Length: 363
Image (cartoon, rainbow, N blue to C red):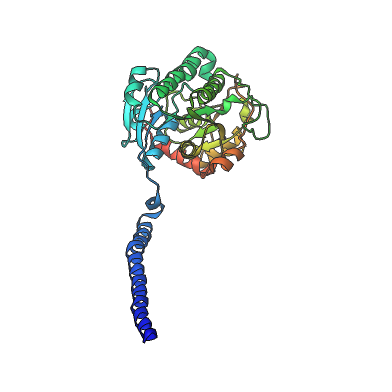
């Protein structure tokens, strides 16, 4: 009888375990099976964008109405960040700023404006600068005032409001241009012009503020960036200068008979690198941002002729002071540590750039 009683007592217990297991399976399907269906349906309808990580961080982009800055702003907005933009519009254009961003017209030298903007900001992407090599030869003082001293105003405001991360647009002009093989971040620096010197000097400021005040800083040494939105008046950069002249049927100026080797990277790839540095880089770091492939300038010019379907009338401008002969990036560090690789080839990027310049009204 005892054995029979034990048997009878055990059967309902086993049945209960079975039922509990079945209920757990049902609940698992309700919770995860439906979710899996939604994810698959979302992917089929919306593609990879359905899986894009969304952020709620508030970030500031200085120089966000400029050539590279406007692309960084768009990429940040696409990633779901709450984006603030400050730009004095000296070389930028208000219409280039993504409508999802909040725009402030002004300078980073304006402490009162920074105090209005910075509360609650998690990170700053610093692209505001007086740029281009040739103008720095005639106005060196302005470059050190804007690119170094005004940057210190920004860093001090960040200290005041507890903003602990900066991504900085530095330049390959920090190097001396003598090395024929790709230039690594550990190679000797030695700017050949005031622009490069001002960019390198602010890298040292960022390093000091990291070690002294724990503000993380990443300096990205851009090589030759090209693409849409590079529309400042009298643009001295080669590709915009060539396209403006070529489309207007004017003589196309070029230097050194095109016998300079350069590393060109498309602006949308650069914007990805900038945001990636904000999301992944730690402490103080310096990274090259380029394609890692060099091309002679004359070959890039011929590529543009092929895309346009016409032969340029060239104007030989001789040699230009402050220009390095070689500037090709060693990109192994940024690939290894941040996982960045360019995705747009030169031909594709040039075609997109040509389409942009063709769509612009010309005087």
